Image 1 (cartoon, rainbow, N blue to C red):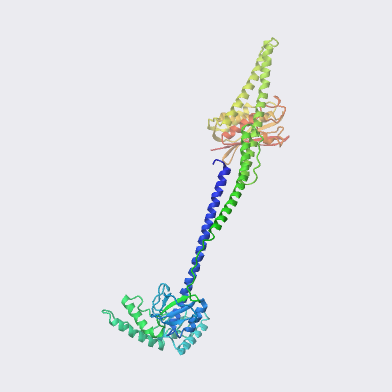
Image 2 (tube, helix red, strand yellow):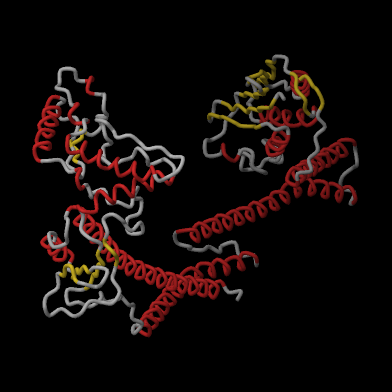
Length: 579
């Protein structure tokens, strides 16, 4: 299980299997939901039929009077509707003569004065609000109220709408009683909130029945009639809604007694198909289970094949990268990988860049070994040759010979010291001993030590103080000054400048020497690089001085740079932080 190809393939198979399982589960849930929704729609249809029949019962005294409406309702919903009394006698049936017998159990009972709270949730009363009975306004009262409402709406520019209550009483919506003064120029709408003669008679009868019930309850008092006061928008008697339960029950009992002669009688409702049978139950067949399994297995096989192809394409560049890494570890610096696009491509590019960097480092190492051998060969050859000549008696060990040998030895010592400094810098073990110093004193020391009769060497300084290693700074600045003096022809000038810029100390070594070619400027601080390719000892040193200067300056947290124009001179700049 260590192979990436196998792991990716198995992981893809697991994902595909889970996807298929989840898809099947979601399809099952969606199908179940659709079935439940269809069943819910059927139940909602039955609830709507129940509500419509309640309204019909509330508006008619007998079911015989409502036959045409019930027939229309049956046609609208495509159902057979049958109503029977408590004894099973048929009151109304929309079926034909050839319809089969009704089921034994009715669907629900229809009673406008005792509404089923399950089918009518949220109802404030068990009495259907459409059962108005003696409260229904006469045509004359309705016409008068319509005229008043239309005039008021026209005057208020139609900002309200007419609402008609079940007993035909009109109200102007969003205009509570007493707000008519907002339109003083409009006719008064007081008639819309005044109890009519029909309502007054009905209320008086209702409250007589109510008071009769209340009189039978000890310790309770009767509620007086409304006496012409405005009635609620839904015209129902709400004055006792939030009273004690016995009071509310008395009002409900009084209303039922008053409305009973005006509504259709209690009836059992049967809802069936037009042919008479019960609606067929919805069932989810399981005959296609094998087919579903076969399709799922086919999808899984297809997903497995696609996963294997994808995994192979993913692993191929990784394997190539692994092979190239092994070749690089064995010393081959020419290994390269073509990873294409994406993350693997970015990894391949990074590897190629690393390989090129290793190759460049190897070339630099080989060049450095060659340069070191070259630098050591000349002084060692001179020392060996003169010592052999002295041993053979061909040369006398006079002071001149000894001075020459000492100079060659010192050259070797400087080369070894430079190489040691570079090795410490590369290893990060180059130690500094910082202390508070005056940088202008360091400049004066370097300038005095590098004085030359053939060129003008001077300084332009301002007092600058910082914490640094004075020995290493003199070494770094001395390398720059010595390099400038070496490449400045007789009669030229070298100026060492010191000044402060923002929070940094700036040292500049400006010469009027031969300058550096633009293509050589990036290599100035490389090891063993010299502008004079002949590497003549007369025109140049070991080629390590500027590389050492860069490491010493960077160890102080600074930076060194150069600008030059060929034939006009160069400017080397050291920037050091004051803090």
